[in-house]
Image (cartoon, rainbow, N blue to C red; front, side, top):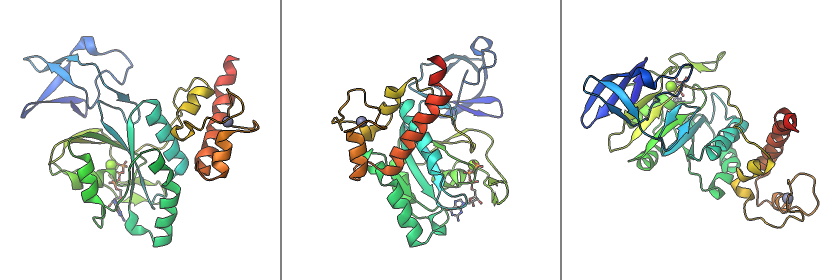
Length: 288
Ligand SMILES: Nc1nc2c(ncn2[C@@H]2O[C@H](COP(=O)(O)OP(=O)(O)OP(=O)(O)O)[C@@H](O)[C@H]2O)c(=O)[nH]1
Ligand SMILES: [Mg+2]
Ligand SMILES: [Zn+2]
C-alpha cells in the first residue's frame, strides 16, 4: 500500500486502486493507522477494510513490512553525523530491522577523506552490516547496490539533502521524484521530499523514499542490560569480573579490554557510554 497526499493506493496484481480507509480503522490522533508498506484487504467499492498483521513497523521513517532499512548519509554536503548514524543503528536493532548504510556523494571526496570514512565505518563489517560508498552523480557503486536491493523491500531514511531521492530515481524508472539543490543555510533540499513514497524496482522488489529528518530520539530502552544487548559487538566477550558489569568503571572488564586492544571500535564504546549517561539521567533515574 502506498499513500500519496492523504490518498491510499493499493496494488493488486497489475492494477493500482485509489482507496479510502474504512472509518473503523481510523483511530484518532494515531499516525500509524495505515502506513506505507502495509498489506491490506480492500472491498469492491475501494475501501481498505482490513490491515494485516505487520512483520515490523518503523517510526522514523514511518513504514511497515520492510526487509531492510537504509541509513543514508552523504560523504560531504552535508557531512556525516556519526552520532546520528549510531542512534539510527541503535534504533534499527531495537526494532529488529536489518540496517544497511549508504554513504553517497563520494565524488566530492579526496582519497584521504574516503579512507577516513572507511576506517570509521569499519566496525560495521564486524556487525555484519553492509555499507556502500557510492556516488549517484558519477554512477559509482550503483550496480552493486541495485543487486543487493533486488527482490527486497527497502526504505531509505536519513537527513535531508543526502541524495535519497536522487538514488531512488536512478534505481527505478516508474516516475521521477523531485530532488533539490542543498541550500547552504538550511542544509535542506529545495525540492525536499514531503511524502513517503513506495516505488517498484525494475528487476523486482520495492524501494521507499522518505522525507529527510533532522532529529532522532533514542528508543524506549528500559534499563542498562537492554542497552548493552543493543551493541552486538559486546556479545560473547564474557570475561568481565562482575556478572552485572556495566562496562564503565568496573575493574577487569572484558569490554574495556577489547576496546584497549582495538577489538571493539573506540568511537562505538564512547557512544555506548554517552547513551548510557543520557538514559540514566534523563529516563531511568526518574523511576528509582
Ligand atoms: N555531488 C553530488 N551531489 C549529489 C549526489 N547525489 C545527490 N546529489 C545532490 O544532492 C542534492 C539533494 O538530493 P536529494 O536527492 O533531493 O536529497 P534527499 O536525501 O532526497 O533530500 P530530502 O528529500 O530533503 O530528504 C541534490 O542537489 C542532488 O543533485 C552525488 O552523488 N554527488
Ligand atoms: Mg528526497
Ligand atoms: Zn564489563
